[in-house]
Length: 315
Image (tube, rainbow, N blue to C red):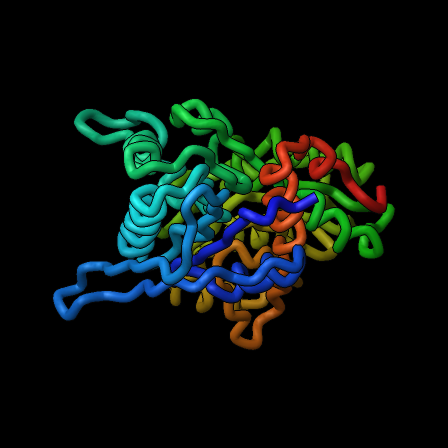
């Protein structure tokens, strides 16, 4: 049962997703002014009473990343100063998650910094999906509900699974995710070994596992330049893969990515609407996570468990 004090607001990063979430649970999207001053400073005004309310602010940290992070922080602060009882930051895509450790001298741990900023602004809970590293949940001093896009992908793949399916990780870091997909889909598993040349270019060097004559599903959490996924798809085809699809939770596609995807090395790129994604006539399928996030919001609002949202339908 939804609480009458449930209020949902959104910044400018992905308003369409916020509207779809509200539609899925029958709650109107709250009225708020979120704009900029001429000098670029963000301005926020919540245009309705939120005193004592359970407030949810939906905002992905997609480009322009820093601007959307500031919008989120300012919206949280505005809700806190308006005496909201509880403020949940709903971040479908937490963009700073890859900066989660010191892998070089004199570099920051930006994922922790952003977590601190959200807490300092007044967030009392975070709802997010497919973090790059699950241990980032420990960076927060407030509760974190971490959802997975896999149930949405599995539902789509239910009628598209072949008997010779191989789930493949495009790098060693994604083996745990690939193993989970392979287990759910009853498929075998493979991995592509890669070498990163620079921030936008990678070279696939070898394959662990058998892919010849198989339909391959690449799985990953994020792509921006599509360098890793297209390099993996190319070497998979060289080793005899019959078809290559990719299921990637967050596609923050740059112009470089679109150029690489035009080569047709992927039969299909399956992603979610955690960030706005324009297919541009390419074989990109965008699945909606609005019902998943909407159900999570309703359950958090009514203090119910979200565990059942991890259950897979169709398998």
